[in-house]
Length: 415
Image 1 (cartoon, rainbow, N blue to C red):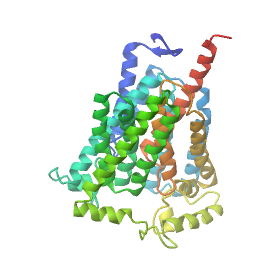
Image 2 (spheres, rainbow, N blue to C red):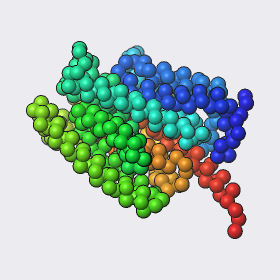
Image 3 (cartoon, rainbow, N blue to C red):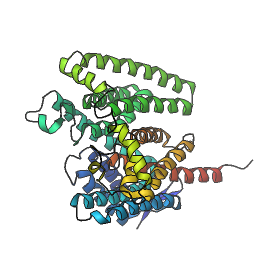
Image 4 (spheres, rainbow, N blue to C red):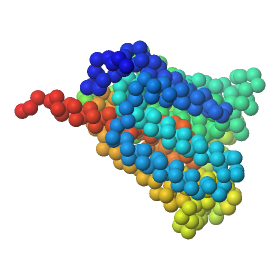
């Protein structure tokens, strides 16, 4: 296969192949917003992209081997625990999905480990386009602007757009919203203004999804990302603009909430969802009570109880991805899942201040990833497509940063 001139010291595919690869990255990002059917367009597009990338050139870097090892051990634990349950079709489907998610993690890590800046930009563009489609449909569905779309685009009076669950819609929109917010505080006026509109629409969709985790996630990840942007800013002017624009965005956000609360139905739903005394959270078998009882149970079950079995012992599912790893895959998965997640977080913190060309995108993805890691304590994120996409992208960017830093040191003039 022909190769183009090197970029950042890495040989890239011929221009036509390179354009195809980048277009596929964009398409994968955009298709991630449509997951209300199975198999979803995301699965189909990601599979097609993976086949195309492997056919046209994709490298497996040594830095990704710990990732692969943890993913294999995690899913091996799930599979072993599920053996007595293979007569249940939903369990087999769950195991297959888990292995597929693991493959997508490795795929994204390999993809983002080279041609990193360009591919991240295409992923960003695709995610924002998909998020805008999902957000507009969610908002239109909530306000009954689509004939016959109320049942399809909403659930229990909450906006869900192109997702099955309003909670997943809200969680998915956080990363594209962070990308838009970065443009608002960093780019020139015309582009910043366009992204003000995009961020407002996505924030509105998150609000109308009435997901407490997504509300808190958007606020906390935005604040975290902006703080990182201030810390990594190269000039005082950049830092000052970020602070000023962040304050303006906060004021406009509060104004938007005030307008929405003027609608009686919206205000009632907001009051209901904002309450911290939900019936399913409280009591011995409430969300947090189940966490304690499930943890005690997990200590006595080396092989767990198998996937999708927790509700047979308790009123609802675990709503805790770390506990679910123990219950679904025994001690092996229960150890490997947090090891995988928190190793990524620790490595991510270590690379915040590495001055790479894709640092801005890195800060957004890392912030959204950390937010999802925290959210995993109160909700099941095990099969969230965008979570595994971010995990793979994190490892790919970290591998690329290590190579970039080594080459920069080699090329630096000696004293």
